[in-house]
Length: 435
Image 1: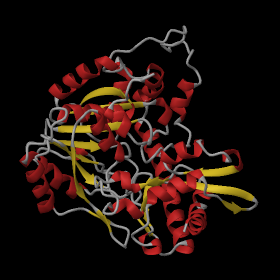
Image 2: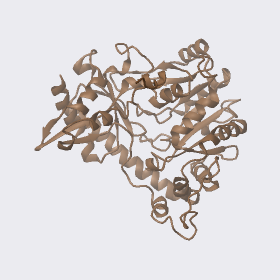
Image 3: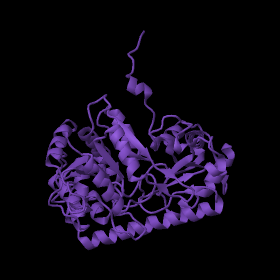
Image 4: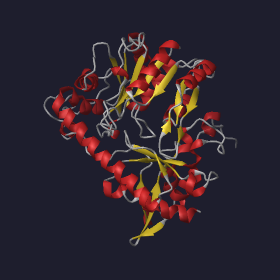
């Protein structure tokens, strides 16, 4: 008997690079015998702030909207308190919130999708694409494909000194003129590279957006996570005096996941200074009804947070990740000195490139699939393997042989320092086994 066919989209779909290893490992017959160090995805394993924990553990408190066991939809925009939580965070970081409009979403991923729908041209057509800076967070490409929108990219290159070079303004402008994008995405505390954009770079990009009449989209999930002592950089720190015309074209993507160690809450937000954009975005999201009501209530506690408490929290998180970044850097110098590792400046990621060890014919996706499906090495009497994220999926180049991420892998700083120190040792042994 004939069976109905899948859509062409489903037939062609591949798992996200940040989930690839886990899916492969789930099919492994000896999975129970292998200890996995999984740093392929930014699934933060630190506790949430106490103010959020108190709500999570006391959902039946007297003032809780959930105390009677009733869990209803919220409005599509999100609860007043959850929206105020994001605005409170901005206010305590010194930004003017008077012109900001907010909307709570099901994680930052939904905010990204709504931004794509609100900025890009018609589905299935190449007009008004979204412009990315490769290496770019892979979900922007996959979400654009899901909703039938196009992306274009200008590529950054990882030099031997660990710096991802930003293309010059003239080259970016040429790319804009050639592809006519309607929006530019920047991640100031960058995922996946771990580098930070300077205020000057953000201002130059903002000027290009105004000149080309584009939306300026800033993914700020890691905004306060800068380890270099530099000032916090945000799209909201750019003034009309610095970039005339920037007002009304700014969109930031916000998240509870990384800065607040609350990945499982699945709470994100769109923040914009365009009242028309937020009105249309809320209308579009009515078919999704609302974000997680419990997550909104838990995260909403930050609406009452004090500035000093937030500053102390930020410093605690920065110190934690800076220690990991430097330990990882030193570990590679000791065990794999020829590995190129991106400069640890911000966010919770580093990119490593093994091209000087294995050559340019190496395929990181094949290697990571090997580690997940059958690779294992014995350390201290137990079998171990390592999950990283293959970087090929963070570049737009479809030809694997030409893809700059062919020899690159992303590491997420989601384990404690002692576990993170094991990564260079494991990688060295697994590379030898693979080769």
